[in-house]
Image 1 (tube, rainbow, N blue to C red):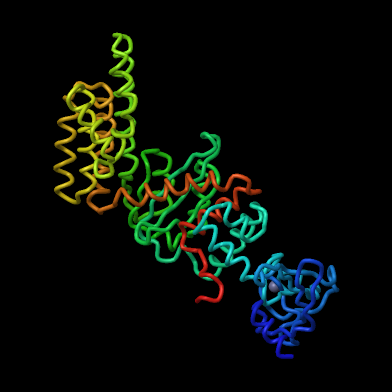
Image 2 (image 1 turned 90 degrees about the horizontal axis):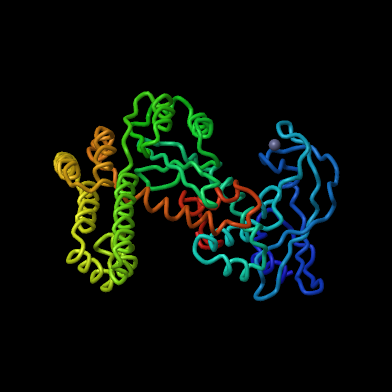
Length: 412
Ligand SMILES: [Zn+2]
C-alpha cells in the first residue's frame, strides 16, 4: 500500500485517483489507476458533470515523466460522456489536458524546455518527435490563454509583420508596449488577417487603446484606426532605423562597385568585410570591427558620412520629447543636403512621415521592443520548421514571447 502512495506522488496522481497496480511492461513502467467517483464522468472540455455515453476506446495510456531513466505510462479507462454543451466527448482526467497523450506535468516540462534550451536537447531528453513538441506548445498556450485573457488592459500596442521562408510566408503580430509581451499572432499579412485581431479584441477594449505603433504600411494604420477610435498612430522606431541601415547598405555596395570598376580591388575587398561594422550599434563593435570603421573614416568620406547619418538617426530614438524632435529636425536638414542619393531619398521618406515619428518619440516608444521581438520570432520560425501547422509555430511564439511558459512541474 505504501508503495502505491509513493507512485501516486511520483507521477502526480494524488488528486481524485486510486492506483490499482504498478507493473513492468517490457521496457516501461505502467501505473494503472481509476478515478474516484466524484471525478468520474466529467466533460473533457468544460469539466461539468455529464452522463456516461459509452466506453470509448477502452483502456488507454498517457506518457508521464520518466522514473529515473525508465519511461512511465499512466493507464486508465477513457469512457465518453455526453455534455449538455459540448456533446459526446472523452471524459476528463485530472492528470492530462483534453485530447493529450501526455500528462500535464510532461507537457509543462516540454514547454519549459523548448523555451529554455535547444531543439535537440528537448527531443533527446524527452524522447519525443519534434512535431509532438509543436502540439504540446499549442495545448499549453491554449490552456494558459483560457485562464488569463491576454487582451485585458491593453493600452499601447505595436503591430508588425514578419516574413519567413524567404518571404513566402508572413505572420502578423501584435505586441503590448507596456509589458513587452507578444499578445497575438496570425498567418497572413492583409486587412482580413489584422481585422481578425480587432474582432477578438472587441469594440469595448478597442476603445481603450491609446497608442498604436506600426511600420509605414498605410493599410495597417487604416485598419487599426478604424477599429480603435481613441488611438493615435505612431511609426515604430525600429522600422525607421531599418530604413537607414538599408540606405547605408546601398551606399556601401555602390562604392564597392565603383572601386572594382576602377581596378581598386584591394580596397574593394577590404570594404566588403565592413558590412557588419557599419550595421551594428557602435557600442557592440568588436575591436576588429572598430578598426574597420576607422579605416572607412580615413579612406571613404561618403560612406563614413552615410554611417554617421544612420547613427545620428538612431540617436533620435534614444531621446524623448522636444529633444528628440530637435534632433530629428537637425537630421532632416543634414540629410536633405548630404548629396548621397540613397540618403536624400531617405530624407524624403522620413520627412513624409514626420508626424508619425514625432508621435512615437513624444510617447517614448523605444526601439528595443519591436526589434527584440522581431529578431526572436524570426529565429523561432526557423526552429519551428517541421511542426505540422502554422498554429503550432504561433503557439511556440506565444509560449516564448507571450508570457505563457509554465513553471517546471512541482516547482510553483
Ligand atoms: Zn462540456
